[in-house]
Picture (tube, rainbow, N blue to C red):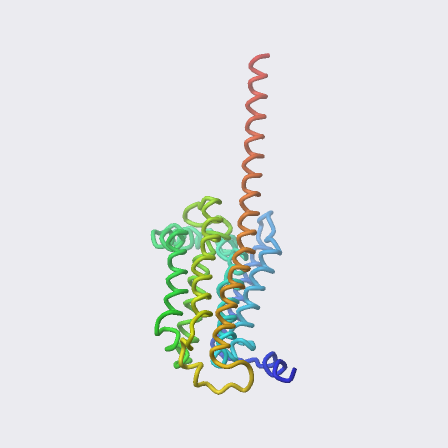
Length: 291
């Protein structure tokens, strides 16, 4: 019990991520306030605000909480940190619809001159293509865990903070944006492709977690030599981290798959209602002509 309390009470106040997260939350809330005081008749959905703030809170927990404090001691804590960033915080930030908020909160001049051209640019189209983002996510996921990248980040804390964390968050945001976003991207994505992408992502995540779990040796020498105040030995720690990625990653993917499937059903329902209205109008016009 003492060791668990020692773990959960370990919080850090690293200035760089602290400032970044506070500024990000403040900008979002400023946008919500601008929409609330605008002449628009449509209020900003509270669920979007809760989703975005939940993502910010999870990033704070992952980077500045116990997992961030012990990510250079326990491999399983490091894996949990990655899961929180890429598979919980990032999709929640996307569900907060920050791009749509920026469009609604900005002035017409800013929208026409900066936001809309940026969102319709060729770079934005490429970076939000669901096939491209799927490949980017997989390359980063497997490439960082099965290359010297991971060990280098452990040996160089500055690299871990300024490169690894932003890299994981960025590719996760790019991956989830066309799948769970508000639909205001540069090109529409079929609902079936969204579901297929989320389902197929389980495969590389499971493979990565399984090979880490099944390795008969410590894959990252840093953890074999680090001083452990408590907890499992290095190889057992690695097996725990691999199993977390393997099992928890698939569970989280299944949850977002359910969200995408629900959005698909709602989109089908909206299309059906529009078709019903169109059909009723055509029938009414035909009856009038007949009379």
